Each structure stands twice: as C-alpha cells, then as structure tokens.
Image (cartoon, rainbow, N blue to C red; front, side):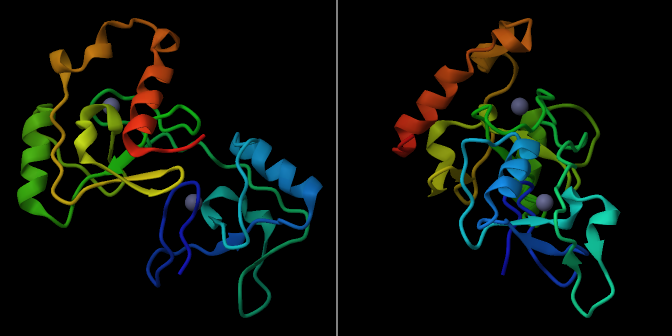
Length: 192
Ligand SMILES: [Zn+2]
Ligand SMILES: [Zn+2]
C-alpha cells in the first residue's frame, strides 16, 4: 500500500489516483523532481511514491492496463490552495517545520471538541481541512518516522488566539520558525 510522500494521500480503491515511484536510479531526473517539490535536501527511498495529483495529464500513459508515467515526466503540481491551516491560514509548505493534521472526521466526539476550540462559528471541516501543529501541545505529537509526525489518538487542539504565543508577528517571514522546529525536534528526538 502506497502513501504519497507529498500530500499523504493513501492508496485505496476509492482515491482515484495512481501512485508513482521516484526515479531513484536516474539522478538527473530525480533532481528535477525534488527541485519541483522544493525538497532538494530530502532523499526518497525505493518505496517512496508521489500520487498522480502532482502530475499534469500529459505525463500519463493510459494505453495499458496500468496507468504508467511517460519517460521523462516531471511532477509540477505542488500547490494546493486548500491546504492551509483552518485556524491561522498558514499554507502547508514543506521545509517550514510545521506539520498539518486532518480533522478527525470519523470521530465525531473528538471532532466536536476541535471545532469548539477553534471557535470560528458555524463551519464544518472537510477531508481537505487541516490544522497546523502550532495549535497542539507537544504532548499530542507522536513520531512516526524521521520526519513524519502524527497526532496521538484523541488529541485535542488547545492553542489558539491568545494562547498562541507567536500571533503578534505581523509578517509571516518574522515568525521564529526555527524555535518551533527545534522544540518539536527536541521533544521527538529527531536527528537532523
Ligand atoms: Zn500526492
Ligand atoms: Zn495554524
């Protein structure tokens, strides 16, 4: 079962996407992929895949039984305007040191608490709604792999508005992202 390394979509019968491995043996092409993903310092392994959402239509060969990528295809679609934090509207971008978490759509009781805490009026999250890691206490996080963090089951976001210490930064570029990253990394013992 594959998971897209970029958008974390899981392969399933219903996702409507195909999953494609990185050209790990073709160094030049691999560099193009990583450049487009803006993840130059990251290395995919043999099993890393990107889903079809990041490729334009003309990259696919649909003539066979399986959808395959045409030779020399490079993924170019990595900005999804919907992927922003529903509370602080930070965009989901890699290398910023924030993780984004989906709403617990299948756990209505927990979801009610999320929505109550976010406190943005009548609104229902969809499967494209996210909250960023700034709204969770460090104790909510669980390290899944070197660079991948998930929430512990039943975690509730509690840091909003005044509790969110960094809200006084006017300009996004003034935000002390490294502080946040360091905190997370120390907590989760991530070696970088
Ligand atoms: Zn994807
Ligand atoms: Zn946020």
